[in-house]
Length: 136
Figure 1 (cartoon, rainbow, N blue to C red):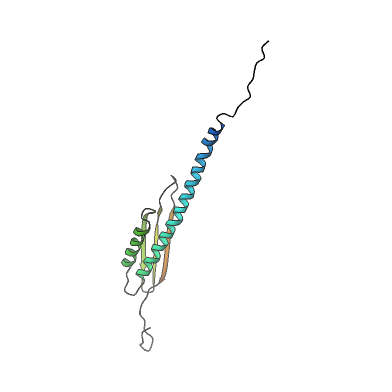
Figure 2 (cartoon, rainbow, N blue to C red; figure 1 turned 120 degrees about the vertical axis):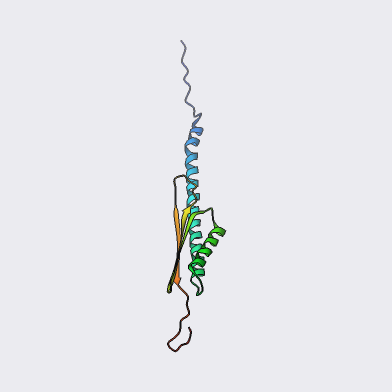
């Protein structure tokens, strides 16, 4: 009589299966970390551009156009590919100036579209006189 030999099950192929399941998850998590780091950086670019635009627009002889030009220059020098589709809004009146820079973060993970904005506001600089006629 022949005794059938049963081979114990081996683990061949288990590492490949684990790799197929784990590596895509690790890559996705890594790409999400990169995506949110780019969003953080783009937010800082927008805030910096808004502050620079405010500094240019709020001076006594400044204009809203000066502020917009300064914002675009800042965006172009710091991150024209990180902050995509930027929009700059400068509102300057006699008493105050405000700037808003917004845009979309470059997409690393498909389907994740993040929007960022930076704002800055302050009083418009102007010469005033005291009741005695002295300039302040």
